[in-house]
Length: 216
Image (cartoon, rainbow, N blue to C red; front, side):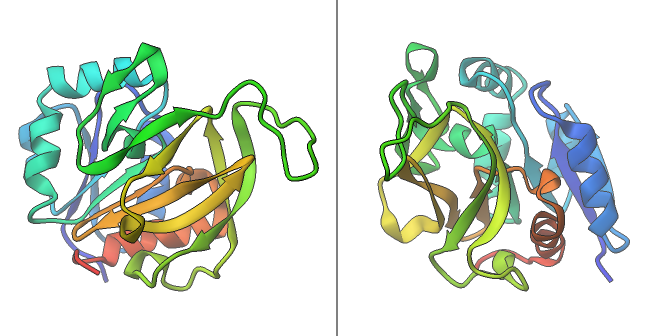
């Protein structure tokens, strides 16, 4: 049975209701707390960093509320999971909104898929990348436990992560171009997809997070 408290960072830029409900469903007795107060989140045992919308607005609110420092501190001592725009916020830099500096916890950039994206056969692909896609697991990790390799997850994004360090890529996906669908480093795990919308595989990943003590 899971114990402790899971803090969901509320900086006004995430679908917190569905993420909270999904975590509560798999929490196994752990308490799920949604808060915009860094001190409340700091007192929890593991942290979820969500995100939707434009990266400039996301980074502006993360910094205004002091969550940038909180995330930097927390990854040193407890499990942290970032989802969707949350993973993009952890990179060095994003091309979105004419260029935005991000948290720099993972070296690499966030790039636009482009207006002329095509698949292997030359067929034009729609941007944003919206819908189900397979994720190839690059490593063995506690958050992949009981999730089949090449399981399908739900994506909604126009920008993708280009990781600088291949050894930090936990999962890969292809939509016109290959991109990092999951990254990891010690207590930190981050995914581009929406686990709360990804049915069985997504709920399993959230359950794994609830029971994960950090490191790999």
